[in-house]
Image 1: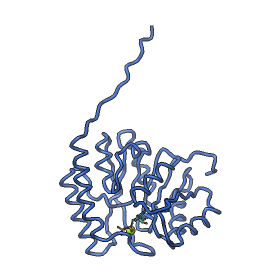
Image 2: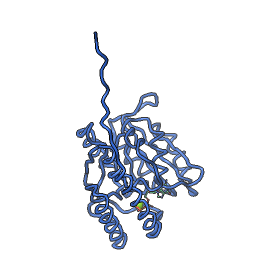
Image 3: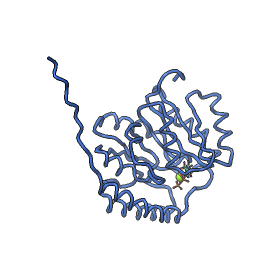
Image 4: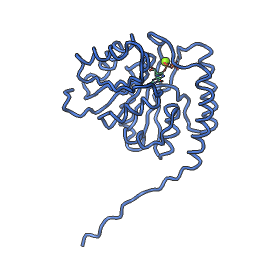
Length: 247
Ligand SMILES: Nc1nc2c(ncn2[C@@H]2O[C@H](COP(=O)(O)OP(=O)(O)O)[C@@H](O)[C@H]2O)c(=O)[nH]1
Ligand SMILES: [Mg+2]
């Protein structure tokens, strides 16, 4: 893709301290999207390790790679939002920066989104054969079960970073810290359908997880109440424009 052309897809990767994971993932994303007009937007959320330098070095040889930086870490949801806001394509894909999400699934997500247009607003990856530890899997299973029971969003797993969506739909969502874990319910709230693609998770390539159990538990409960309220108060008009009389 030459820089002057508008890409068809923007891949947004939120990262905080993912040194060692950047170059292999960028190569995999580029390979998965070969033949398409794409850009990759890394959102470096106040990393204190070599993430920025690795990106700067790679940007020299990869014209489709961009780096957005938060001066101070603002969290994964804000990072995704900054990346989608900066994206130039009408369709965005997100994935985690630690290598757990395999970019080889990106074309399947994009194909599903295109096939479901304009009714489908989001395609969510749903993990099968997860590589996390037993305890982490249990936490995630409970969180997904509680969320599914409260929100009835028909989604087995919202914790997977691999998602494809229309940029305009994402930017119209009410924003809050933690939003990235509730995308299916929020996109459904706007009147769109959700599609799903099973994806096979991998182990984190290098470094450490950014989250502990308690970080996610308390805010997760608070966010669930907030999203439940948003859905309860949903009010979606069907807007039609009345044509001018052509006389
Ligand atoms: N921008 C940003 N990204 C984050 C933050 N915390 C985690 N991430 C990224 O979100 C993705 C998932 O986080 P990770 O630590 O792997 O969580 P886990 O897979 O649930 O253990 C990775 O790409 C992280 O770099 C954060 O505070 N800001
Ligand atoms: Mg991870």
